[in-house]
Image 1 (cartoon, one colour):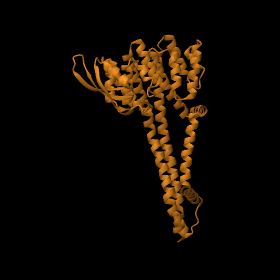
Image 2 (image 1 turned 60 degrees about the horizontal axis):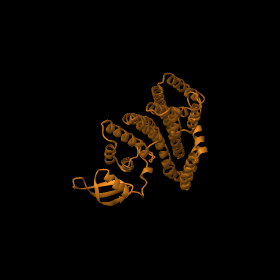
Image 3 (image 1 turned 90 degrees about the vertical axis):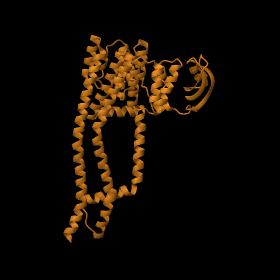
Image 4 (image 1 turned 135 degrees about the horizontal axis):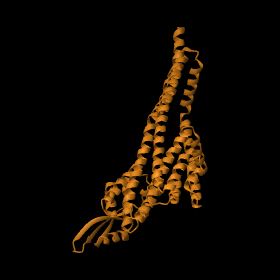
Length: 398
């Protein structure tokens, strides 16, 4: 994408100066002529072609705000190109350049869904919904529902993150204090013990051994830790490794069930939005299977798609995978199929899963906090006793 400065004349012969973003000079001239202007001169101002802004990460909150603003302007009656032009001026960083590229493609005649599909920041679900809204002529309504859905997702993720912040801070602080004690405090005390040739208890000798190991091999420990994390990430990215990780996490007590409910909350909310926007249930299931964050549940969704394509009800297909879909989901989907209100039923199920997930996160956080404090207290007590006991023995012997 390049920025061009131009001089042009309107139908009255008045000279006009301005800037336009386009893929090339021909595209820029076409955009200017589309404004009923006659091009006098056209110069490239700056080139952005070498930068792949589309690959830069854009936060989910930014996409939610972008969608809400676009929905508001479209519902207010603004033309799509004018709405995108305003969003381009208001956006920042990568999103601004992505919006500029989408605007240029739309001005060239492409549909909004087609223009957005070129950028990874817009998910397949997002693109499918926009495409559905364009086909059915209710893009304004789809954008509003999509914005609502994205905002709910961000709110839900925020609740989970906030609930886990305190336990993480405590764990990090505990590790930090332990390392400071081992690397700086224990060696100083060791020198004191050596001067008095004190007989040390087993706990103190253990701490001294660990301290010496950390001080001597700290660079190997850090390098080994980084290498281990890197190898685990590579393994997790592989098909086999990712499947093993996803399967393992679902089997972890409490955490596995919580993870499943979080994923199901997103699935049912997304399916409700897609079905309510006119996307077929088969297409909705197929798209959801590709974007869901757990491979085990993704496989279950793909198998469900195959069964629905063969004529089986969605509820029956879900019931064949009890390890992924709980009984309440199959039961409620059956009600949705019988009443023809699948989107409403899925929305209610999503709310149920969200409430249960929120409660479990709070319960887990409440249970983890005292457990961490107890472990922290025991660790500090162990270190203090191991340090103080030899000093007490020395003072007693004098």
